[in-house]
Image (cartoon, rainbow, N blue to C red; front, side):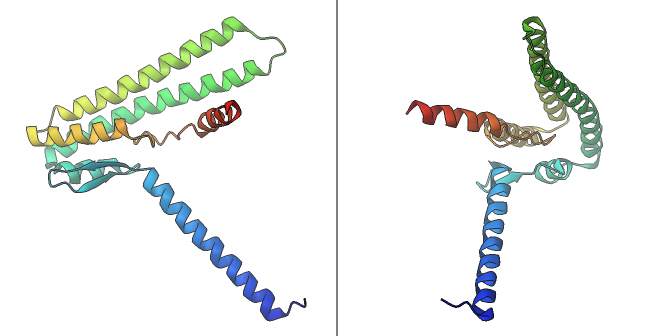
Length: 184
């Protein structure tokens, strides 16, 4: 079989077209999976974005100017605190990696770091809950109901933490899938 220039170009175009379609489909699936979904009183689905949540809350909750100002202050304080906790978590993970490279297992060091990691996760969850509770305090009853729906949808969503972009732990999920396949 002799390949001509036209045949090679045609195959290259098909390959590029297939790659582009696969990229678009993968990106769209990624976007759909990264958003928590809620429904408003009319039954319409509302997507909670990962970024620009201030605008999302302003528009979805129909905040007045004074509420927006309070929300902005709470959000800034939350992000300062959450970012510090996330930094601490990363440092603990780094220390755990260093501990793993030691020739002999340091059980007490591992237990201390694991405990500290758990404490930091608890701090982050407490900080997040306090943030939403503070936001709730400046809302009227209809806005509070909508905020509760948003919060519930984010808790039930398996995607991600919406305010700091922490990724899903796909490595752990893959490890579980691999172990389950080995058992079968």
